[in-house]
Structure formats: C-alpha cells, structure tokens
Image (cartoon, rainbow, N blue to C red):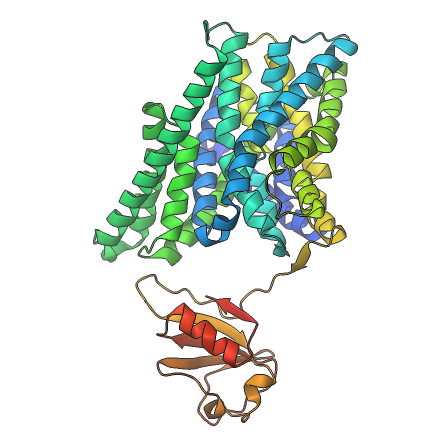
Length: 495
C-alpha cells in the first residue's frame, strides 16, 4: 500500500513538472497547470477529501513560500515603496473584503441564495488577499522588468497581505459560528494590531538570531546542514510566533527579509536549496487543493452563478477600487501603474486554504464558500495570470530585463564587488586594448564574453563594443559607480 502511494505521488510530481514546462512555453501560469493536474487526478483516480490535512499542508507550504519570497527581496528595492506596499497589504485588503462582501450579500439575495451579511463578509475575507505563490512565481518566471518599482511593490503586497486576510477570516468565522461572543470591532482591531506588532518584532528578532547562528556555528564538514538549520528557523518563526499571539505568516516573511538582507555564510547553497524546496511546496500545495475538487459541487447552479459573478466583480470592480483608494495619497504612481497594480490582483492557493477554515469550523455554508472561492481562483489564474506580461506591454510599463552572462556565486564573506559591464564607444576613446582603459587600483577585468566565447583577458587584449566584462574591485560601490560614469558605462549589473 505504501509503495502504491509513493508511486502515485511520484507520478503526480512528474506530471506537474511537465505541465509546468508546457505552461511556460504557452505563457500560462505554471501554478494553474499544477492545480489542473490535481483536479484531473482527483476526479478520475484519487479519492481525497480531507480539509484538515489540506490546511496542514497549506500552512507548511506557505511558510516556505513566504520565507523564500522575503529572502529573495532586497530591502533596497522595497524601501522606496514601503508605504504604499503596507497600505495595500492592510487597507487594500480590508476595502476589497468590504466591497466584495456587500456585492455578495446583494447578489445572493437577488438570485435567491439569501446569504447573510456576516457569511457574505466571511466569503469575501477569504478572497481578499493576493496570493504570494502566484505573484512570486509568475513575476519572477516571466523575467520581465516593470517600471515605477512595480515588481517589488506587487511582491511586497502579496508577501505581506496574507496576515490581514487571515485575521479577517478568523474573526468572521468566530462571528458566524457565534464563538466570538461579544467581540466588538475595536476588539478585532486591537487583536489585529497585536498580531501584526508581535509578528513583525519576533520575525525580525528570529531572523537576526538565524543570521548570527549560521555565521557563527561551525559545521563546515557538512555544509548541507546549514539548509536544515535555516529550515528549522523558518518553522520555529511561524510556530513560536503563533503560540504567543503573533501572526506567524508575517513573522516568516519578515524573517526571510532579514536573512536575505544581512551577510550570511553559504548564501549560494541556501538560496539553491530554498528555491527548489519552494517549487516543491507550491506543487504539493496546488496538487493537494486540486484533489479536493468535487465536480458535482463545483458545477451546481448556485456555485456557478456566485463564483462567476464574484470572480468578475473582484477583478473588474473591487480590486481596482481598493487599489485606487489605497494609493490615493501616493502621487508617484501614474494612472497606468495603478491600473496594472489593479490587474495583478492574482488569487491562488492562499484564498482556497483560507476557504477550508469555514468547513473545519462547521459553518453552515462552508462547502458553498469553498467551491465559490475555488471557482473564483480559477477565473483569476486564467484571466489575470495569463495576461500579466501582455497587460504590462499594453500599458507601456514593461522593459526587457537582462540576465547576467556571468553566473557568479559570490559568498557574503568576500568583501570585493563583482559587476558585469558592457563595453561602449566612449570606453574605447583612448585605445582598444584593455591596458588603455583607466581602471583604478584594486580593480581587475577577470573575464570577457564575446558572442558565444568566454576568455580570460591580458593587458594587450583588444576590446570591441558590445563585449561583456566581469569586473572585480575592492573599491566601494560609490567609487566604482563614479568610475563607470567617467567611462560612459550605463549598462552595469551588480553580481
């Protein structure tokens, strides 16, 4: 029996990876194909209907996804958009839940479903946040640059808005099941503030402890154990914070931010490990969610009516309204930028995971909520997920993002600056050989890329416009940038 389960699991993973390759070729979100594979297996081969297990898998997967998203985010990138990102992750989520909740209440009564206002708000709360797995996966897979700092803004929002939606969902489950007692709006706000403050503080503190421990502990005889140690910190950050009334999801994301923005030993190995583990977590999570689907329930009239209506309203009305209101104080974003932010309100695994809470809590309309959220997520992934790049091009916000030719893994312990530059006409004004270029002391060109060829240069090596140079320097970044400016070099990539 165990061998059969292992075989089925291996087949699921294999088919999911192949589906991801097909998705990339045709411009579809890989996560949509993972979800589709799970649905196909669930409808035809596997009987799986455990919402408790799905919650557990979703919790573990989200810990990995949020941590890796934070670790891959440079604070220098999000600092300029920290204000609007936080507002979108809090006020934006609350406004989305309110708008969608009012719509569900009015629409359900119009079509004869007659959902109460608390249940309508509960359904809206589960769908209020954008999905970090979907946003991280699609934006980073596309390798597309976005002007006006839009990519770090969208990633910051998606990585930090789950706590708000989680709190709204938990509060509304308590209200609907009457287990919240006399919980007032002010009690809910106070609980939210405490969770955010505790989650942020513990996430930062645990991140600093993780960095200190990994840098000081000596297990160089088996460097793979550093990844295991950091994984332990990830799960500790979530579980300990949750146990002391903080928000574990926020703590994990902040821990990732700290680890990603401080000097840490063996960063290359850690990054490779968590990138692969994140993809595994995403695949398992979406496959498991797909296995939950019951075709008979999904195709019921009530589910189809409400799911299609809510999906369309969320994409076309609620999300744009929430974005434009939330970003009203921030004048730096153009109308086109706000429109694009509105469009990349991707839903994914997180809303579906949150939609299992009403079922586990015994909410009367729990299965209706789950199926509506599932259908709404499918609509979002199919409509928005497949047009992320196209919408950016149509709005004139996209630019080609160059990948470095030199894949240099530089340990944090090395203080030298590595950069990749492209040779220009101005750079060759005083001669075409390498020795003719006025490089400062402690700065070397260690490799040249020309066409398909890579070679180590000498002083008499002749350069050509368009050559890519790998430069290593002990100068600080300000001095190095000044040198590049004097040489007329504008295409610089830090490695």
